[in-house]
Amino acid sequence: MSIGHTLLGLLESGPRHGYDLKRAFDEHFGQDRPLHYGQVYSTMSRLLKNGLVEVDAVEAGAGPERKRYAITDAGVTDVAQWLARPEKPEPYLQSTLYTKIVLALLTGRNAAELLDGQRAEHLRLMRGLTERKRTGDLADQLICDHALFHLEADLRWLELTAARLDKLAEAVRP
Image 1 (cartoon, rainbow, N blue to C red):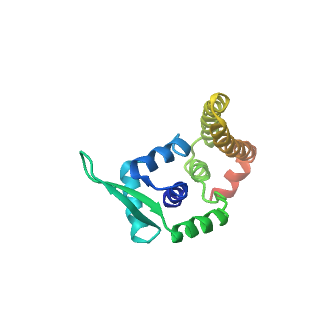
Image 2: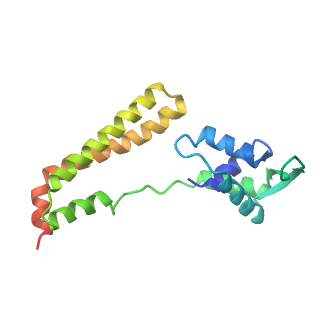
Image 3: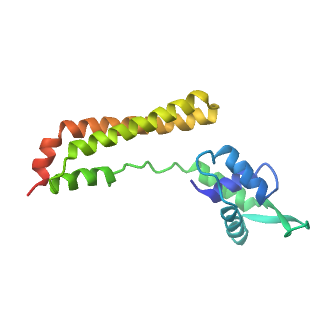
């Protein structure tokens, strides 16, 4: 996720302080990974330097001055271009799991046990996501569906690999 573009998009509805941006980010996107204040302010500093935001107001308070940021026309254009650009699909051609299976075969370890353990871990995570989806709001449901579909694809791959494990062992062993 591009934090900079996300913060810019949040600013399109109107100027906000860094604290308000963090709160809005966490509310909409940070259920599993809340944004740290340091990330907000370092990102805003970079966006300011690049001319994508400007300081709309500075307010004095009991602590440090509070800056209120506003998106610039260049920032609006940047967000629009980012939103219009399709994300590159992740083909997972260099899977850590595949590497572990091949190394298990090369070193004489039990690759079938590795696959069984991974299958159990996927199923455990899927149960948790299914419960979260059942009790969550629409945003949680959509996020969980996305993750569940990927995990289901992984499970299909695990089953296929288990069925081909003998052939893979023949192919990778010297």
